[in-house]
Amino acid sequence: MTNKDNILQRLHKLDLTDEELNQLDKNLDLQKELSQIEKAESIAYELFVPGYTAEVSEKYAQISKWIDGKEEKGLSSTLDEDDKTLVSEPKTIAYKLIGVAAAILLLAAIIIQPWQSELTHEEKSEELKRFALLSFESSGLLSGERGDREIDLEFKQMYDMLKAGDCDAFRSTGKYPEQELWGRLYCAWSSGNEDEYLRIKQNIIDNKYPKYEKLSK
Amino acid sequence: MNSDNWRKAIEDAKNGNDTLFSKVVNHKYNSHFNEAIAIITKDKDLSRSLYTTTMTTFWERFVIQGEKLPNTNIDGYIFQMAKNAFILHKRQVQSYKHSFVQPMDTLDIIQKYSSVVNEQGSVDHTQSLQFEEERNKLIHNAVRSLDKICKEIVEQNILNNVTLKTLRQELGLKGTYSAIVQKKKRCIRRLKNLLLKEFKNNKTFSLENLTHDK
Image (cartoon, rainbow over all chains, first blue to last red; front, side):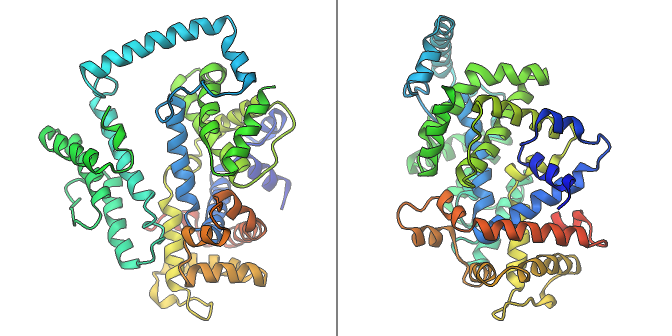
């Protein structure tokens, strides 16, 4: 491995110092070599630990939610003493006031119009699409985890259609109710079919499919 | 002082409990990183995205891959990671972000490679298209160059369709991703370097053929 390899591998891990970042040649063809590093790493992990790439992908989505505090309630309540010190400094009184005000606003928003008041139609559509794709990705079927290649391919086709936003081609087979309902929910919302959307939404909630609580707000 | 929370969160997460990790990720963003990263990016949405990328890489490296946490201030280190992520963003290395949000490229590649590996541990190219054949050759050359132990693990995973569930069962109830990855770390590192060598040595095969099945 050359020094450049090492620097690029460490850049991929976000591990360069300021000095090293400055040393990088601005005209360097990073795209190709970094893509090779990324692909070599993901193939190596996936061959030894099946499901690895899906796990990382899911964690990215989860962390995004954590940042908004959407998955955990009372996020600052169980931090240890160091961070309790942080939140008890004078400036945090302002945070607390903002927090209370935000909570009131959020409550009002929920009472007036669930979800729609927080997100635009397009944003909500993207959010539903993400939940739908996640239901596929976390199933284990895309990575062959359940071992039936024929079923996996059919399942993957449905996933690809959703990923491409191709609702016209997305058809229910009845074999994968959770994933199909999430997919249909996204399609109903994005096409503006509110009756269908409400019906499918209730179905998901009644079945308590993973992430159903996102719909019951 | 602040680093203690991170250290505890990482330890918990390695044992399969990321409750504290989620709380620290949220708290640090809202109390510090949202503003700190925005000073560099001048863009709040981008800052959020960079922090998400940074924390995913942080989790991957220190929870799953078991890298040792730096002895320096961890908040400072995370900020430095975010600066790295910003450099990558500025260079528009799109594939970087895609590694987090689009796992299907890699899964497609693995699935197609798996489908041509036969019981004898060699590949049957008649089943694949020309670019797939070339791609499968690259992967197979790298796998063949592994030592016996590592090679057998890959072959068993492929031929027996080993799943994450199976791997967890091997490690008992406490089988976490972190424990599974640790067990195979040496082989993973070796295969990664062999694959990189194959990619670089192959003059005629473009990266586009490696990553897109079109």
